[in-house]
Image 1 (cartoon, rainbow, N blue to C red):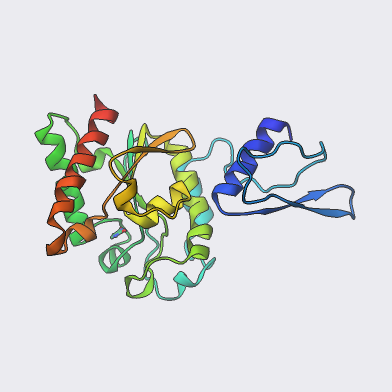
Image 2: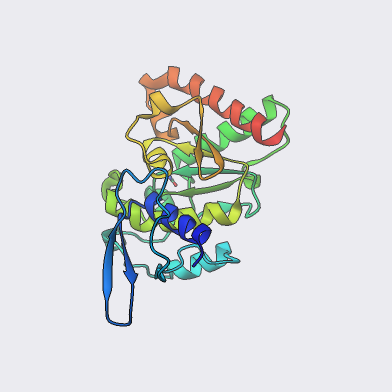
Amino acid sequence: MNRDRLRQALEFYRDLGVTDVYRVEAPSAVEVEKVSHELTPISTDLAPAEVTLPSLSPDNDTLEKIKEDIGPDCRRCRLCEQRSKIVFGSGNPHAKLVFVGEGPGADEDAQGLPFVGRAGQLLTQMIEGTASKEGIPIRRADVYICNVVKCRPPENRTPQPDEMEICGQFLFRQLMTIKPRAICALGSTAAKALLNTKDGVMRLRGHWHKWRDIPVMVTYHPSYLLRPYNQNAKREAWDDLKKVLHFVYD
Ligand code: URA
């Protein structure tokens, strides 16, 4: 594995929160390399031994292949226990814009599609309403929509870090396959998964961030905007979306 591939692989693992990798020196000897949390920029000073990292981002990856790898009955984490349907994602596989939510709710779990409940209807209105007002000819079907975790957390609780880490590998593959011009992170779980930050939405929203080389705009989750006392946030979310749509489609 050359240094560029090694750097890419380590960055990929770091984004997933993995801090230990194993270097195979000889058929029987295994040495543990500590890849510290402070690994920025990531170190490429490892000795040129073969590093055995399973490819989480295969060449020529496709959404179909990712779906196939998740499998029809994924049991990688506890979220499998109460889910009805795995919610992979939907929309244009060549979308210039991807929206990332937190995880399926009850309606999504029943239908196997993301953002089809009340929050989803608001998201559709936000996308199509803002686009039409700004003279940008796109509909919801032109973007891609998915979540950090693909199975509904019981009682709609926030996904736990290990669940985000396990399912995050599939989200990252989806994003790398689609290669959108921008990503819109809906709410703090999506922001955390993509930006590896503890900052909240109020602090992050309205500015551009990056996941790999892809610009990321964080905004409020539509469920938050549905609460009656959050009407100011609605205006801000519309502003954020306007920014994203002009950036992507102008
Ligand atoms: N909330 C989310 O975060 N995702 C969905 O798909 C639906 C509601």
